Image: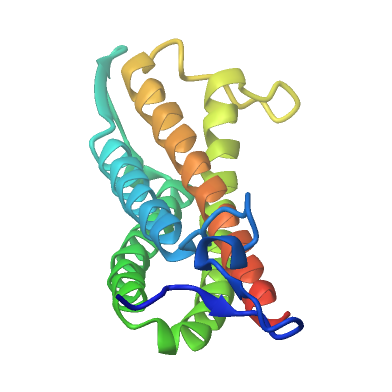
Length: 192
């Protein structure tokens, strides 16, 4: 029967294999699985925010029927375009992340690209979220200095859709920041 013991370099004695490993060290965490999971969440949140924004419309009969739709505001159009681009990016990066899980040899280049592109997408999503939130805030509170009236007391369903969409896109922004941090940490860990 063959022994599984390794000879010790110092004394020539054999040390069992289980004792040669440092006890209490956890196995290394595969961060690409975490990356993949976050990218699934990113895809779901960006698509949800776009669908909620696009379906936001309401018509009220004040003296005449006046509709409120997302495409009446350039900020909301920018929001839909920005989050659509982020959704497409998340789908493509999801496929790259799956590739990185299966072939870890090319993962350093992919991590570098993820760090750069995730930061770019975080900027796009954050700016689109800020633009939509600012218009939503004016709709909610109005602005007495320039005599802009609040409309959310009239178009309540429309405003709830806008607010929900902005909240989900804020969640997508946080996910992108986490992805940037994860990619840079993984690059740092590989360089040390």
